[in-house]
Length: 578
Image (cartoon, rainbow, N blue to C red; front, side, top):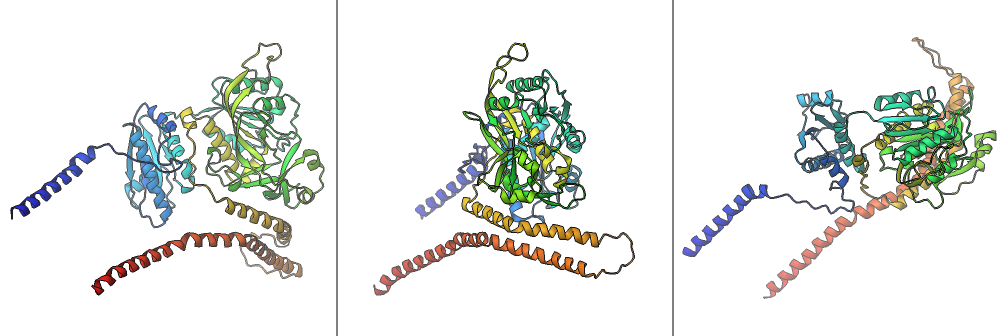
């Protein structure tokens, strides 16, 4: 009896100690987390911690996440929890300088009204962030998107940085061609986001107030301006530069400066001035002249998401970019710079002599005759590394300036037509957003600029190759059909123009119109058949891959169950005989 009482008392004491540990002591213990992911995606980077340590006054972050919204997918709900974990990590690392408020706005509630008032997106349920700071305007992230997960840390850090530095960065614009008419919409967007200062073409020195320098077609600038650009870059001013072997928006500009090639080599890069890029896979349709039908233009490239660096700030949120008669960039011999491609051609591309392109009678001949090398060419790139002066003796009697820099930062685009409104309007916000993203990143504080995207996973290389081959096969077979379909649509519109009258109209049953209608129906069917045929191996491989991933799990469970059954059966058999 006594031993049973002692055992009961011991269990009671152990239970009380366990409860006391959980209720009193455990909350006071420091929390420990382990990040076993290869890319350390659950750990804030040192650059982010430096940014948080620089905060001078507290700020409030209001995270709106509508839980269990009918229109929200499970993937978006999981991503919402991921964003919440990262925000909590920011709050903890800020040491009291960030107050995080997590809000689940119910439909038609005051919280939902506030979220809408601040401009958060509710198409799939709220999943956005609002940041406020005493005496400053609010900043927002309209909606967190799973496809931007690799940029999540930068996205939140960007908002925090804007709360601390709300003033607009100063961008110096130095152009060898006029953008007032061809790029008026882009200039308007730039002036909304930045303090744009237009610099004179014969400038002798870039003002030190310029946070980022944007240079367009420097070949057409005088040598004095090139020297000013070089000295500013060597002093550490970030640069975004557009150079073009054949500029359509600056056809009248005279490219008279031969020092530009030496300046590019001093920066560790090169671009052939007499070569332009054509691409059979990414070629888009264009009108050669007024009143002429649209044809496939091999030098006007519609670059899809696959042609972009998916984890760089410059291509943040872009689906497509259009370039026209662009060049190709590469590292100069013996260069020690790091060249990170931002925009790339496909493997069905080639460099063509600019004179041959200008003398071609039809674009079709260029597509059919040009042999591709099977390699991708760099259209835009981020360049970082050491640089040297291309003016070692100074400029026109002036004493030599800076001769070298350990690190320069620039983004070089081998195309100026990307800035034209005509190309931006073809794919709204693509080209302009690329420019705005890049300028914003180049002008960002050093701590924010050093925050690198986290690569979440590596795609299957074999599957990517098969998809690219399928796209090339479809493109090869569909070029002629797309051309015929475009011509058919134009002929049909001429015979069947739009009417604005509100009364009923007779149906035109002419033989020619019936033939055109039949072809308008037949050609899309043939295009769909070509596409299905080209992508059939890819879809078959994807099904096999899914099968390899899904089937082994139930087989493994069945094997475990069968082994357990055999084990239990062997244990029972001796007992029966005993």
